Image (tube, rainbow, N blue to C red; front, side, top):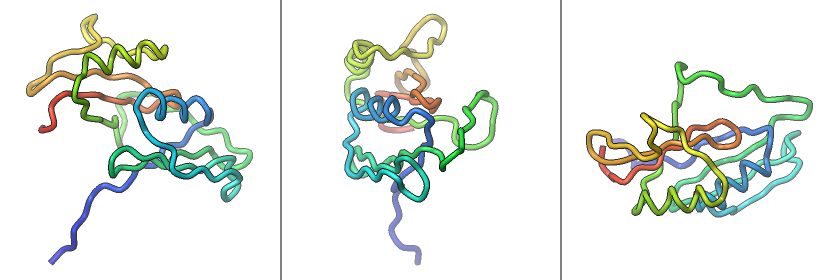
Length: 136
């Protein structure tokens, strides 16, 4: 029998630590639970929490400039999605902080099969999706 499992965290690397940190805390509501400066030759390795989910946010190793994601046609994780209770209110709140959304057919919020969603790009390039349907 397999033991109980859940998604613990994803690791996001950034060349601009403070901008990424501010985005996840101020725009998306994550809580900074641990910040470790000078962690194994990285300027920062920090843990952010939302509910029971964590993001490990880290800078590159000393002397390393991280490459940015330059294509939406790639293998691997394509985006990180968060469910929100009131999508329109979240969009307005985040816009007031100065962040922009990826438009689809000229709209920030658009309908998909089972609900509404929007997408934005975090400072380090991670595509963040917000949606109002808890199911698939």
